[in-house]
Image (tube, rainbow, N blue to C red):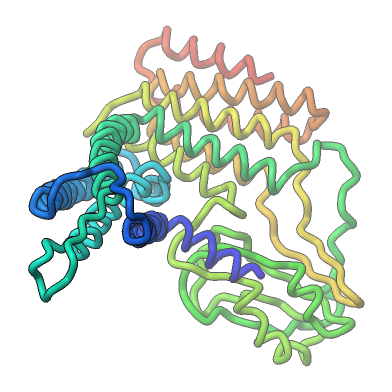
Length: 423
């Protein structure tokens, strides 16, 4: 099921899937309206002759294919700009944008519609056929042409907004919030899963290694728990988002004798792909925001405001994680036990702040310390003093690096005051 879900999500996110579906809908509309015109003796809509209908449809189809080429060119330029200015990892989100996909599909679909209607028009002296002008289909083509003009304006407006950092960071932040709610729904302090068993006492495990190099995109622990032989214990030392090679261990199995039986299902339970996605990988959302902030504070761009925007979304995500229970990833089947590695709160916090702290100026470092103070307060409200200590330790490292770069005593004083608010 994990591989099937991954396949469907990758397919639905592909840029060609929705445009193809929209184009197919326009093709069916063309066949349907032409057939309706054939079966109706009353002239519906357009009442011109065959020459006028052909002229209208030719003009619309020629214009729409030109507009489609323009829209595709704008899309490619936007993707290139986002990749260079922000992060290549944000390109997938733009390709999966439904507005862009629907507009591209509509332009191609109207072009195909006009061609299909154009081919059935008859003047009456062609091969002895009766004259036929599908008035309803031609009228619909005129309406679709006007609709396409509206879509062109919508597309230009939407692409202009799509390259704004507030839009990109906001989209990533929303996807990250949804992933947190889905993967970590329990509040801190809720009854936890049972403790991780000490399987090492059962001897050396059997090892199942990767079949290809890539990122772990999906883990289906339920599948492993239900398909493993009775009495099997399985550990997955990886988490979604980890890079694996063909020499890396995907599964550790006790007893080692059942490893061969699991070889057939490991490809369906552990999905390895060329790129990460956020469905089971909250760290990927954090990674994207950190990458945008790092580009923003690089000497070639020097845009601390963008970095502070990304830090705000990182703060929001870490405030939520500070009050969530992190499950140990334990699943039980009929006599089987499966446990996977799950990134904890400290791993998310380090990823979000420590790399930024190495390159942050005073303004960005102050924003990092303010965010850490808010996260520490969220952990206190959740009753998680151990997480407050983690935040405090990260704050000390951020302060140390920021003070070392601060040249003015007033800057150092403000940084120390911001760090003191962490507690």
